[in-house]
Length: 127
Image (cartoon, rainbow, N blue to C red; front, side, top):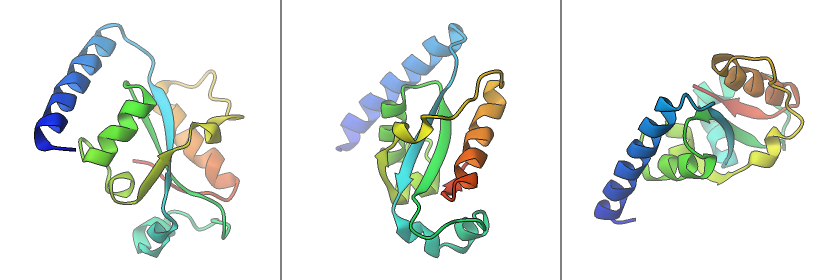
């Protein structure tokens, strides 16, 4: 993506975020699969002691944006964690199926999803 295209997109995302915040819109959970090469990073591996070899590596986040927009933001480096920016493969919303975050505050849902996935053997990073 060219710099001018990226800059236009960033302005659009910022405008959408301001509108969503005014409406007090609920945040969206999202999951990005990561390249297994991320397991070579000591910090990442230490956060995933119960990782089962062969299970996916993922990044879990929460956003006021649509998950597809947030994935694109990570890929272009806009407000992006290093793991999805450097190792992100695809948006994997199907991995959220079966997670019951009802009754949890937005501030709790992301961490709860990360722990739910870790309990299944996934390697998970979440900020």
